[in-house]
Length: 304
Image (cartoon, rainbow, N blue to C red; front, side):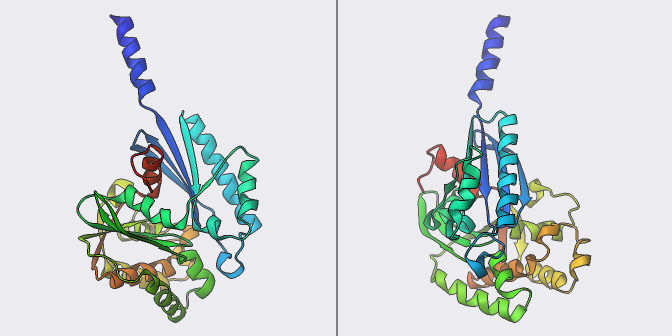
């Protein structure tokens, strides 16, 4: 009987497979550890890979090296966690850089292969990870691109990625509000008219940062961020507060990651501009995002 019990326990341990998904973004490298489709934990390392990309069209050597080191560290951690499969994907910064092969080779020689996600698929992955119920619009503000996707449980009616994000905004405009608003206004015209939807969901570090600041988080609390209702007035008030605070004093704002403090004003203006464009006073912030969506894709639960 005891032997049968041991065999059963061993079978359960083997059956519950662990996976890792590493997302190489334009501002951060992120790690997801998951048991099947259930998140165990996430980690983030802000490496600024896309810094200077808008001006030069190229990834900077120091940013590439820092990001490659971060990916390798997360890859090793995933191995230590016993992950059976480790997926690594990259988005707009790598996708659009003239020297993308140089960065990909940095990782290849370390034994890490990277899937560069096409722009038309990125919005679909974010939607797959964040979707709840009904007809939703999922908004994903990144460092170098921002995605909008509209659909329901049956599939997508709309998905579009545009090359605008908080790193590009900062590179092009700094914190000149007039330039920022003109830059954003011109860029988001590219979304055109979206289908009707019931709920606006937001994923990515910009929206979650605003929740963390509003809730005065000294330590990030993903369980509080997930499904948080963030209002347009919250976004605008917090953006103004940060804008009026010098860089040094921004280090004292709970919830604002130090490496994000010079980018967040542009991110806030973009978030509020998109909410206005979509005629929404509230967005629901989700912790599940394109990492969970990518895992579903790899497990053949969705087809991007």
